[in-house]
Image (cartoon, rainbow, N blue to C red; front, side, top):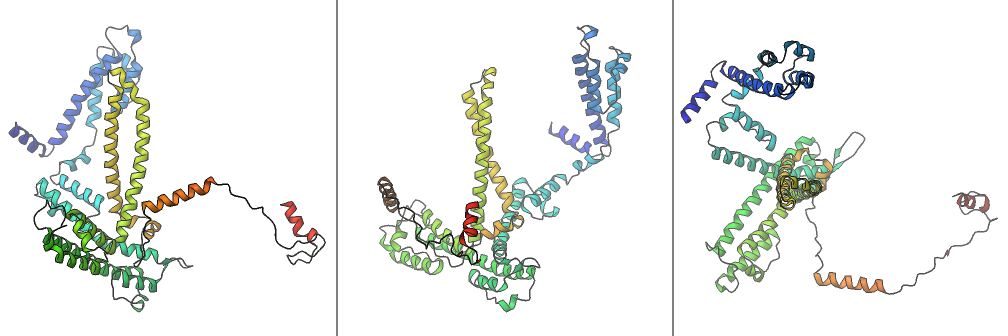
Length: 450
């Protein structure tokens, strides 16, 4: 069977063979469709007065682009109409131009399809030489690696975009960049040695390229810190993945103190060695990596969170609407001897999984097209380089404030009478607005009209 299938595939690559095979398949399908249509509209066991010649003609016209009339088919007669329709269908099929379908038989068509999808999905350019002669697993790994590289580059580009949108000012001649503010921001954001004099005569694209170089160096520092964090945690926990925490292990006190000092100096994490000892390996990695992301990649992480929240919000609303439609229609499955409750749960689960798949698809589409995002949205993800975060109130403080609010709302509060404590102006006195008219002929008349 495998050898026969291979011979068939090789035969399809010969000149003219695909067209002939396609036409033969279409003709066989046309014969079956004609027989079914004749039997449906001109049943032999029915009286000839009940035959629907008009419906048969419409079927043939729509299916093969013909211009048959019912009276033409009546002249052919019931006995010969089947062969007549098959003949005109074959003539119509023979006129179909199959040139556009030849590209699907190209040996590189699967590779070209993957190349186009990767470019559309991730904005990545890949050559045919990269994609040819690779197994599926190798191809998947290659695309994943290139997508990660592309996203790393976007992580470097995004803070530059956010900063330039943030310091963009409107003017009569169009948007104008505040170059001095950009230089000051870049000095603290990227630890860049860039000055206003260096940027004042540069165009927008030139400034973007300069900042992008500094952002890439900042990105490299973040990756080095991530590797350093993993190395230090491996030294503490070793190869034992079952260790829940380092509490009680006196031999690690010095290492924990050293790690605490390093986290404080490098990432501004105010975590004592005692707190570090209570953390598991995963918790410590999560805290340290989150601190690195907050310091070196805050803008793109905020953008990701906002996008995901928007996608989840929209996806959940669509899911609830779909579930309402399902609830109103699921009762009909009872006619097919199916329990509506079971069907509702099954379809609801399918809708829920489709919702998450859709969220993932739309989120990755937008993230890999961040340069097409709205300028106001990108600018809103800009973060200050030296922000002071207020401490969130504790649960006890929230409960205390809530109790005070409840107690305050229960008592009777005396409402003070509203009084006009200003000087009273007589009707015949000069109006205080300075018009020179009497008060009764000026502002008091306007108030009465109002």
